[in-house]
Structure formats: structure tokens, C-alpha cells
Image (cartoon, rainbow, N blue to C red):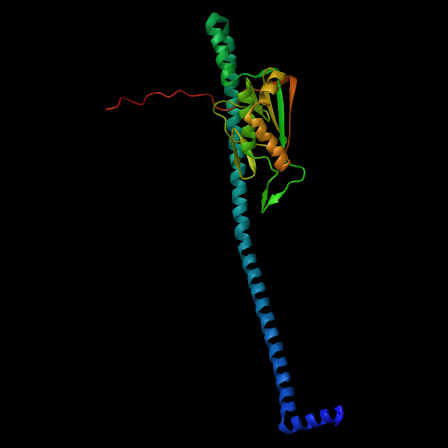
Length: 266
């Protein structure tokens, strides 16, 4: 029996039993069900997308209103802060004028003590040799998730400042903000705050001292090694150099206060 005869014979048996017709109907039925399910799935997906879009559109006015309210609060606080700083600057000028009036009456150790205390407290501008240290984000930062590993942080500025104090700096300013015993260096989100004021990059740290000697002592501190690791591991850019003449402004933060007893303990 030839191959063609065998195929015709098998087909005849299947047709006689209705198997071929059954398979054809089954295939057609399965194809129709699949199409129906596909249409239903696409309809459901479209419904979900449209519902999400409607929800976002409805919530957008509320989000916009909240953002506008926050911007208004920030603007109001900036105006209030500017007014307070202006009043404080005026009070500082009045204090300096008063000191100049009474200075002729001050002689000897009293005058010397006043000058020493003013410089130690940071409320007198100074000029002299020192070290200029700058910090800046990596040119091509790397990320761990959403964290920028090449970004200068508040603790990096703290390390640099602490190293300069340890090396013997007599006065330090960060981006023109004089550091005193009451000055904080911290972060707010991605911003670095010095004395509660945001600073921009590059971070310029001005330290007065003995110039080359100050820089040599800084290089022997653990903070210098920390700065080296920032460069090697995270590609943070920084440099330190001795300078012949640097300016450090007077502090603009509040004057130190003295605690007084509130009463006698019973």
C-alpha cells in the first residue's frame, strides 16, 4: 500500500467517526474564546488606565494648592529672616559705634581683654595668611540606587573644618559665614546648611593661621586622610593651598548669652 493510499484510508476512517469535523469545530471554538478573552483583557486594562488618569487629574488641583501654600510659607519665612538679619546687622553696627565711643576711656588690660574676647567670639573681621580648602561634587558621580555617591555632604564639610581647627586655625569661615562655638553645619535634604543658611558649591573654607605651617599640620591629621578617601572612592573634588592674604568676616549669628539663676531651689 502506498503512502498516499494510507493517508486517504486514514482520513476516510476519521471522517466516518466524525473526528475531523470535531477537531475543526474545537479549533474554531478555542480561537473564538481566545479572541474574546483578549478583547476583555484589553478592555479591563483600558478601564484601569482611564481610572488612574481620572484619579490623577482630580488630585492635581489639591497637590497644586498644597505646593502653592508651601511656596507662600517659604517666601514669608524668607522675608521674615531677611528682616531679622537686617535688624541684627543694625544692632551690630550700633554696638560697634558704642564701643568706639567708649574705647578712649578704656586703657590697659581692659581694652586688650575686649579685643581678645571679640576676636575669640568671632565678632570681629580678620585678615591674614592661611589655608583655602575647596570641596565640590564629583564631575561624573556614581549612584547606589537613587543615592549620589559623589555628592559633598555636611559631614564632609565637618571633617574639613575639624581638621583645620585641629591643625591650629585661628578663625574659619565657610562660604563667607564665620564659624563660632554656636555655628552648626548640617543638612536639610540635599542642601548643606551653615548657621542655618544654605550654601552653594564649590564649598570654600577659609582658615586663618600660619599659612604653610597650617597646611603641613593639616596633612598630618586623620581628617586629611578622610578627605583623601572621598577623592579616591567617590571622586569628590577638593584642594587645599596656603594663601598669603585671606579675609574672614565677622560672625552674623546671635551673640553669646549668659544663663542666670531663675530662683532659689527649695
